[in-house]
Amino acid sequence: MNSQAQVVTNRDVAMDAAMHAILSAVSTGAWPLGMRFIKALDAFDALLGFRRSALVHIAPGCTPVLVGHARDATLESAFAKDVCRVQSILSRSGENGVIRSALSAGDDIVLNDVNTDLRYIAGDAHSSSEACLVVDMPNDASLAFNVECRHRNAFNTEEVDFLKSLADLFAMALFRDHPDPSDQPAMLTRQYLTLS
View 1 (cartoon, one colour):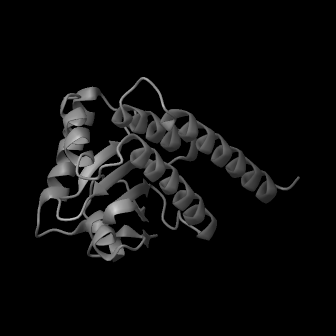
View 2 (cartoon, helix red, strand yellow):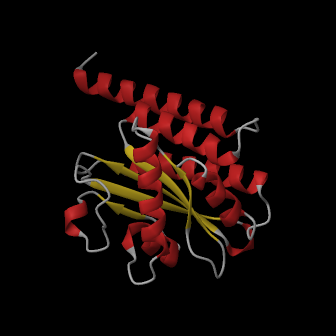
């Protein structure tokens, strides 16, 4: 088997493992949904080499709310600080950033070089690519699945399709556990504040 075929095979295995880990983590369980999202995003980042993966929910007339964020093996205090910083950026009305822009447009944004787009707000000096996939939910709510990578050109068509299918899984889990969209932002924000 040549090295190109081996790389594809290894990536396919990693994608299958990530899908299984996410399905397992977001299934109904004893942990609150926010904690299950953290576990799923941690596994996703570790298996596929992405970083700072996040889930952001928005209901009509509300501010976007961070409902899931990978820890990237950071200390709990650093994780809580990053979560608060991301939520602060999402709450500011003058700054769009990639996530707010994607949610506002209701469309996916893929930046294979973050330095070429003015919407990018640096969360990590080492990120070179970012993809934000938006899923429409019932009652005019939306969920954004945002992923960063240290490498440029990290997101080809196959990767984006895969990420979109994972975003759909996260949206289904969120809606299953919290079908009332006005309840989701407040409840999941409180879960995050208890992590600090």
